[in-house]
Length: 226
Image (tube, rainbow, N blue to C red):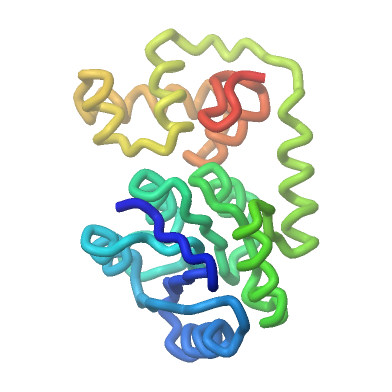
């Protein structure tokens, strides 16, 4: 469903499996002026189920190390349902793969749980204004990753079909979805992905996506080819 909008306060939902931390963030938002925390969830599945019946909020604070569906996968699904909703990742994880995956999935911000609580509140207001909210160390990593986008292209000898599969991977599609869209079997897609990883000299989906975008092997689904 579409995202709701309020002229008086920013609607926020929380997705966090740690009860104590979830309660602390909820109390922070409830006590803040101009913000209202409407719903809290312990997992992504309950969030997505609720979105089938209710308007989406303006901002979601999303953990990524959730039981069941990961927060990163949930971000991608959420943005399909409500593109206007801003997602701020709030996590203990600061490795480059997760940061890159979250941003590619559509996150507007990425904060570590070690950030001050007032920084979390500031981030909610920041993304609501259209900005990007990140702790300094995360912002530095993101800048470093994205400044490499102008790296020269290298011919990895990818076939046209492998380029199609890689492009679909960059768009955040699952193997099942790629197989369906390209009229291939799941096994064939898996074989193409193994070949792609070998040719790109990477060992994970996130690394393949990062290299594809940095070296402009496929079009960035958000910005187009660069």
